[in-house]
Length: 544
Image 1 (cartoon, rainbow, N blue to C red):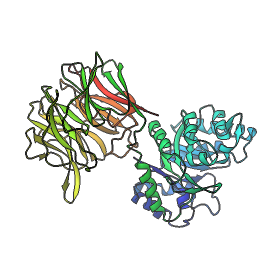
Image 2: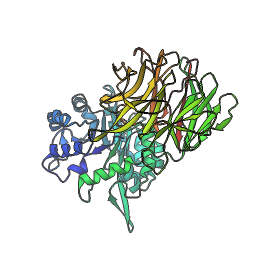
Image 3: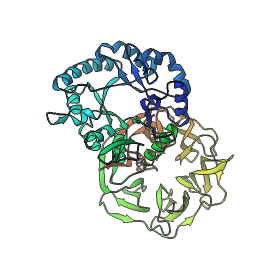
Image 4: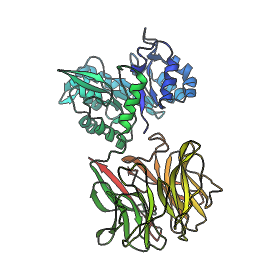
C-alpha cells in the first residue's frame, strides 16, 4: 500500500539540507510528498518549510531525480483566486494536481461566504487543466458550528461541490467530532485524507505517533481505501527519530491492508458482451475465487478454509469434502475433465507453507503434489498432465516469486520465469502457452510465454497494475483484474479497493474496461469463465 507524507512536521526544525531530508524519505520507501508552497513571496523564517513557488520550480528536477513526486501541495497566499496563473504553472511544471487551502482564520458566516467565492473562482481556473482545489480542516473549524454543521462542512457546502475536502482525521478528533462519521457525511467531496493522532493526558489531548492514540485509524483507512483517495501521514510533532517514527506509522497502517472484518461478499456473474451483472448470492463474511464447473451451471468458491459449490439455478450450497485440506486459500483450479480440483492448502500457524494437493470434486482423500513450499496454484494444463503455480524459492540469497510447473504426479518442479515478481500462471486452452502477470518492467502487467517458459511477451494494456489473466474456453479472449497505478505497490493485490475488469483479445489487441467495482483480492483469482465463453463469475464486496 502506498502512503504519502506531508512535509511540514518533517522540515520545520530542519533549516538546512532540505534535499537531503527528501532523500531520506525516499530511502524509507516514500514516493509521494506534499509540501507547503507560498505564492507571491517568501514567508520570513519559514522558507525551509514553506517553499517559495520559485524554489520548487527550480528544484523540481532534483526532486524527481530523487524518485519523488508531488501530486498535491498546501498553498499559502493572501488571495488564492488572484494566484491562479501561478498555480497553473506549478501544475504544469511540477505535476501537482491537488492544491490545498485552509478555512479562513476568522470563522464567521461572512468570512466563510467570502472564502467560498474566492475558492470557487480558483477551482474553476484549476479545473480547466484537470487540477482541483481542496480545503484542509484544522481543529478550530471542526469545533466551530454554523447552522447545525461544523464550520468546515458549512464552508464546503458554500462551495457548491466545486471544491473538494482534504480531511485531517486527527484534527477532526481533536475538534470533538467522529472522524469516520465526518468522512461518511462528506463522502462525495473527500479527495484526500491525512493521518494525525492524539493521546489523552488527563483532560488534554497531546499529539502522538500515528497509530498510538485514540483516533480510529482502522475505520478511516477502510474508508479511504474504498474511496481510492490518497492517504498521507501528517505529523506536526515527532518525539524522537523522524525516520523511526515514520517507519512505525507505515507499519501500523500497512498492517490494516488485509483487515476484512465486517465484510459482505456478493457472488456475481457478468455477461462480457452485454455488460449484464447478476447477483447470485449475498454472504455475510468473506468468500473468494469462484471457479465455473465446466458444462454445468455450478460454481466452486472458498470460504473459511473450505471449498463450497453453489448451484446457479437452485442456489443450493454444498461443502466439498477436502479431507485434511481444511485451510484452502483462494488458489484452486478444476481439472480439465471436471472430476477433480487442485487446491492450495496453507495450515494456520505454520508460516507461509502453502502446498498443492489434488482432491476428487465429489470428495475424498487429497493427494499431495508439491514438496517445496510455499506453492500457490493457478493453472492446470488442458492435457491434464501438469500444474502451474507461483512459488517463492531461494535464489542467489533472496526468495524470488516465480512461475513453476510440475507433473500432476509430483516430482521435480521446473522454474519458468526469472526477474521481477511473477504470479497467476494459467494455460491457454491449446496448451501451448501460459499467461501470467509480472513486475519485470515496473508495474504489474499481463504477460504470455511458451509452455516451457521461453518467448515471453507483454501485450498492449493500460498503465495500471494488472493481475490474473484468465483465458476464455475458446482461447479468443482474456480477462484480467486491474488496480490503479498509484493505489498500491506493483507486487500487491489487496482486498477492499476500487478495481476494474479489463477484456482483450488473445492476440493482445483491443484491451478495454468492462466493469468497475469494489473488490480485489479474492474477486477473480482463478479462471471463472462459463463453458460458452459468454459469462464470468466474480466476487464483489462491501464493508461496514
